[in-house]
Length: 181
Image 1 (cartoon, rainbow, N blue to C red):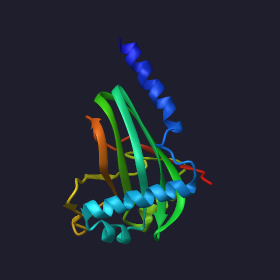
Image 2 (spheres, rainbow, N blue to C red):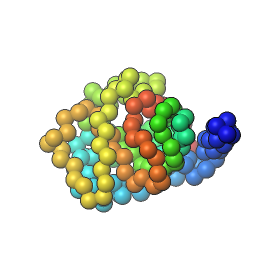
Image 3 (cartoon, rainbow, N blue to C red):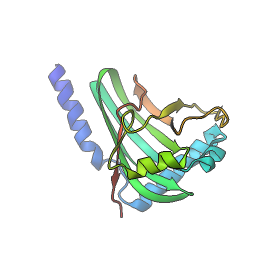
Image 4 (cartoon, one colour):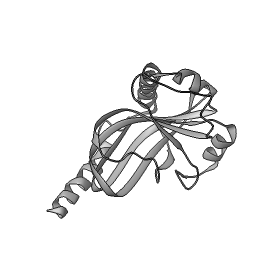
């Protein structure tokens, strides 16, 4: 039984790249990122000021995670610097342990200093917890960002979650640059 569940999970994960989790082009990914930022700014007071204060930020409009003991998550996003798309990235993570379910969510990872953004840009593949620490903030609708209390150089936000997944972390997430046309 466990083997059948594992195989079903792996089939679902292999099919993810052909689903709407991935934008077909840079233009579509940019549009999806614009939509995700609009939701972030609408649902979280102070989000627009916070993003303007950052040196740059990654937007992952849709990250899909599935897991039954063994889990995986993936999604594509865009790095915005000075309000413009600078590069495209894929986030991937695997996990083992207490987890069950499936979830789609949006993520914003903000680089609050030029040094943290430069370190990210200079890496060939950036792994959360190894190459950089991300202070994770899970904000529901109507919450407010207090920019005076956030002192971390890299801050991550998860919002717009749909589905049910017991497990919330960015630890071990790998972010790699991809080419989009």
